[in-house]
Image (tube, rainbow, N blue to C red; front, side, top):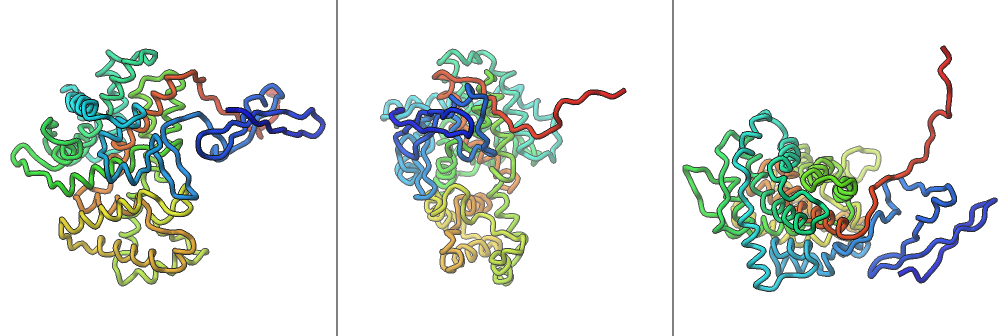
Length: 423
């Protein structure tokens, strides 16, 4: 893997030879671990040029618009697979055969229930608390309810914890929503698919059980697939960092949820709806498009372009098709959704946006779909966390299955030098 060398020339010091590592895809990486022997570190705020780990799970090429899970393009997984197959792939490295899938689905369904006492835990939260605040607290508390399999050095315990998290997150997310509405929490049903079960627990009540629309269930499943993992982002790195200390898996996932809560990370689709509120009406679009083009104006079109994908977001085209299917199924006459579709049309045809690759991204369409289904914006990031849990726990398992060190970033200290108290 390290067949090349790089040489670092430091004025007044002997050259430092550093190995150059090559992965199966992506740029070569200079291994700077040997720098510590020279008493020097690298300086990389935000870790934008630093590979913090070696991984075989997800690969992204932002310039080419490529997203691969274990080598499979995200577009193919969204078209030909389902969320639980994608979960199996992320966790185990290969897609399941029929027997493996049946066993995996059965195991997940047998773990969808949560400890009955967990319902009373919700009573400690205000009804108007933000759903992410409740989600973070409840997931972190799972280690107090499921402490029989918390030996992180035991591969079987790691597998059980992973299954529990994937299975219980839809139940917990729906419980968070029901608690905020003051409605009875719905038990999961083993006769439904993963996405159908989530929609059942979200929108049905004990006095009225409505059938789940196949179109909406399919859309929900695609949202889960498209958010399942995204390489070493802020929340995944947080899960790995927490895990490197030996923390239990539920604590690590709660840490990931806390990182995802940040508006710069998981709140993007919520920001899309807030932007549509600000624009207000189709008649105001031209004014706000002009503001977006004005570099001196602070207004920004949310849900357009992507920090990682410099060409196009490979997940967006799948979401666009799904969005069209959902809106056609529901036949919604919603001014905000009409406004969103008009913005979509303008961005796809206006030379200003095309030249800068400011195409609608996955957050733009997922926000519209979730609103159309009837999910409030405060729940958007909760659903993101639900879908991303399998990615987080896959990275956590990968890290623990091979030698690792506790994360300990260095710093460039610019504070006071030593000084003494003068009294």
